[in-house]
Length: 149
Image 1 (spheres, rainbow, N blue to C red):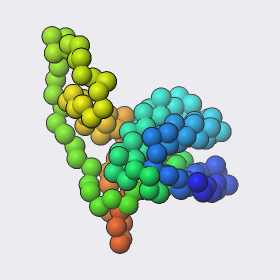
Image 2 (image 1 turned 60 degrees about the vertical axis):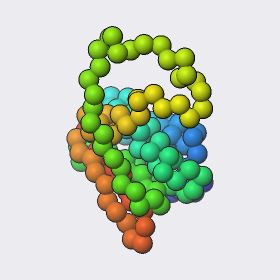
Image 3 (image 1 turned 180 degrees about the vertical axis):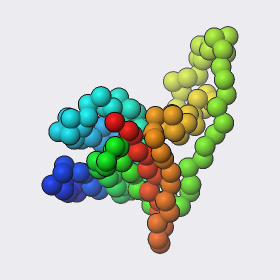
Image 4 (image 1 turned 90 degrees about the vertical axis):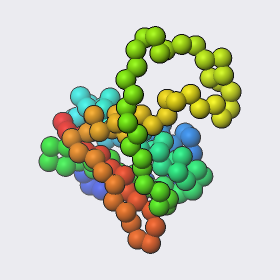
């Protein structure tokens, strides 16, 4: 893993796209939020970081990803780069009722798809002041979100 820190405590991290990477990013972002005095948005930033990193890990498992976390005028910007050219897919939200929530005996079986995937980007949209995707040359993309404080 490579990391650089600017004078303002901004992060620019290169790391392996592994299942544990989201926890590392949340920890480092939390430390920066404490330094900057913006702990009030920590929960939102942790959720956004988890979703963006998880998507990058899924797209490029065990390859290099980059994470940038910077402070702006009224927001913090979290951006995650991965080498995949596949663009994130925003799936429509399906409203559930209590009757729809039932035990699933197969839930813990490897590879079982229970229909709960695809909720991450709508969560990011709900928590972020702004979010988007920027393609990079020759390949890859930055997926980013700004969280207001």
